[in-house]
Image (cartoon, rainbow, N blue to C red; front, side):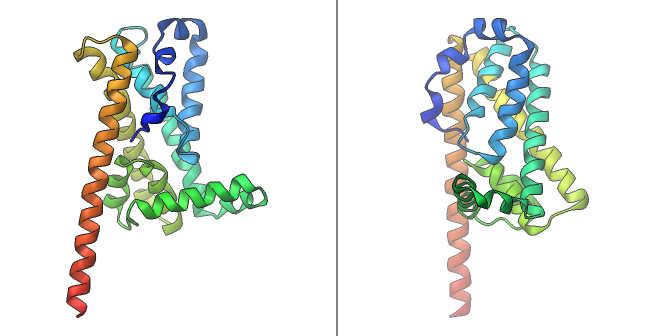
Length: 217
């Protein structure tokens, strides 16, 4: 779920002085970064969230505050991305080259996620790299609405926040490593879990495809 390449600079993110200097503004930036990642998946907000969980484990600030800010940022970003695709507002970005590139990238992520078409599938693909964006973009293109959309957004934001903050908090409390090393450990674990789920989903999709081909011959 996280990109190892963005682990650069983790030592700075895990420096307690950073939070003491920024104060409450850090959490405003955290919420904005998490929301922005829904639209631009490569943006490394996951590193910030995991690092925040590590700092919470070291009692630099309350873990519930980190969870709340992450949840609100995730929910806002997910709903924004859903609306872009649900009402085709994404086309407003076509006038700029970066907007067209962004749209193509989101579509590629959605296709790579396996083309989930059920509510459970949309929730499950959030656990793979880029799956958060793929889930909400696909929900928008499907026209998912009503209670199903509300449940997907709320439960998706909650599980994503608990997972990301938990990665930092658990590694920070159990490994005995300095904050920056605990953050890196959390990133590695998250990446491996995401890749593992991707492999399982890819194999299941290939198996179903083979079964359908056999049934039609």
